[in-house]
Length: 252
Length: 276
Image 1 (cartoon, rainbow over the protein chains, first blue to last red):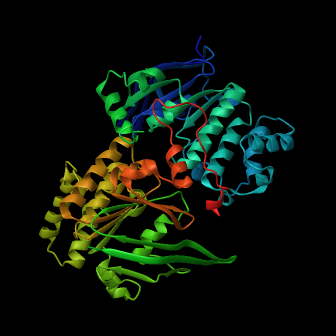
Image 2 (tube, rainbow over the protein chains, first blue to last red):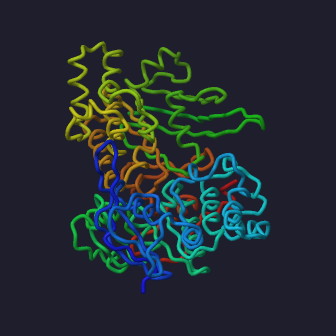
């Protein structure tokens, strides 16, 4: 049985009397310890799917099951201990007036877990930051360091599943490489399951076993990593996306 | 023919902990060609672009042995002289349309503002020119876009509006600061093609500032690679794969590729001698 099962998911936002169907009838499955990618342009609904899993988007149809069980609404603590999310922009997702220490201790306090002192130091070491960073504020960190703090926060409760919403698109190429390496290492060490959203097909290809191409809220085509590498996509949109990305690869 | 010549440009910020040099002795000459400036955040690439227009506010200081635009000394130019240059002769496209367009003004009004104020065009002339500019950047329904507010446009559309705005006065030099980093890959390609066409047909000089080395290599004739305020390597874009400097090689290799190895991506070694 797959760890995450999404069946005919639809999300519809209503704004000013107008209905926007952000996600329409999307289904996919992610096995435990797999890494699954969602790729598409802005507005294709890929981030909305992650938000729907976390209960942050109005689901109007379909089902999301984790471990075979439908998710409760609201999601609750058990869900938070199992599934955590890392957001795109580390400049926006960390509270500007909270120290790293406070950011990392909050999930432990909410879940009534003790021993936060040692856990925070270990969490910082795990994401490759010196423990001395514990009492810094976000503005005293670079973009890459902030994203490491955001990853550390997501891992504080030892979740099984990480939802990654464009975790490196706000970072420089060299810092992106370091962050992707960190994520790969953590996944291998802890046996994590990733659902990763990106508009960059090369990043998805590097990180994921399977990828779902999305456009205008609909699933276009699901590809295995091998199919992607050998350009074996069958739909014109997936091909166009591949061409636009492959265009940027220099030969050699 | 040299359009822009920069000799030993330095940009210094005086901070509480002493002066910080954001740009440390940059020199280059630009003809009617496409020059790429590449580097990470904090490498001084944006500051170099802004310094050409003298768009650096106090406490920042610009110093240069020489900085000339078609023979005119930019360092000695007065504020009114610079005002005449900015926009009309040298234009700059900023990174993010969300922050660079006026959010409470319709796109049409923003496009026409310069034409009315600077060129004293009539409303009808200004409107016609603005619509023509939007068509030049391949916006399909310019009438609708003219009446839209910036938040009603997608990122790609917003960026095209900015490019249209910069191209109305027909500048000789366009400085594009990360014009496509906020955009999707598919839209990125479209915007770059538009820029490319405009540069070719109008014979403009272009300074293209980006952190994406591969993108710059595909799009420019010549590339300057910057690190910590200095140019570490200058090379023709087609020779990029033969880059000698370890920093340039590092930037090239750290990007994942479709179908590439899934091992750890090579990270930059920032402790090497060149990084000091």
